[in-house]
Structures are given as C-alpha cells and as structure tokens.
Length: 174
Image (tube, rainbow, N blue to C red; front, top):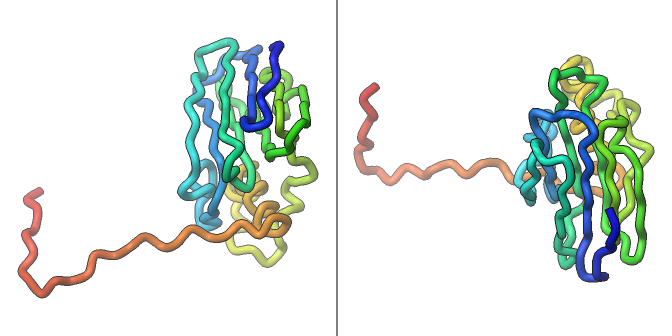
C-alpha cells in the first residue's frame, strides 16, 4: 500500500488478512429499504473485487460520484461479528488508512474518507421491518437508513411493469 490517487480518481487499496468467501464494492446512488444486504442499495455501481486476492487496488471514477461507496466482505467460516464493512465518500485530497470494521481487512483510501457514526441507531423507530432481526442487524440496511436521513439518497424507482398490448400472450410450458 504505497501510492495515492490522482485528484480525478478515488483509489482504494485492500489488504485481506483473513480469508473471505464473498467481497463486493458498491457505489450507492439509490435505496430499496424493503430489502437488506446488497439489495438495499438497489441499482448501484458495482466494482470488481476478488475475495481470493490478498491485496488489490481499485480506481474509482470521481466524476459524478455516488452518494457513498460500500465495501462488504464475509469471512470463511462465516461469522456475523467478523464481517468487514466500510462506507466511504469522495473527499478530494484526503487519505485514510484503517480496518474495515474488523481486523481482517485493512484498507487505504485516497481522495475519500470513511463515513462514520452510523449503526442500528440510524434506523428510525417507526421504520417498517425495524423489529425484524434480519433487517435491524444488517449493517448495509443500517447504513442505508443513515444515507436516507443524512444524505437524502432517493428510493430506486419501482420495477417497470409490461403493459398489456391487447394481443394474446404465449404462456410458457413448465
């Protein structure tokens, strides 16, 4: 982990100090708070990360940046307490280095800073699904609620329905 990004790009250097089964990085632009895990970020910018690589570097475009980026990694063997999470946002000239919530994933950022201060307390008391353990404990869902209240990130548009054409429809044989 040596070099920095140019002012036009965000650079993220990831060092895995543990084994991960799943790792992903999403640029969050819209939310779907009826979902949890990665789906809560609706249509997002996906960036290729490889959970099998010990070190990797990604360059993210700084033009038209998303509201935030979110890095998530699930360890082998899976253990909720060892899941790695790091939310960060564009900040020209800034650098940061630290752990992605847990000691197994070290990250260095250039032209970006972590977003902190979010957690289960970010979920409004009246939020639908707040009483669901699966939603309430999902760190992605917690951060999505923080984005809603602190960055006013919009909901994803509902999926488009196909309009009836008035013509008979072929039914699939199953």
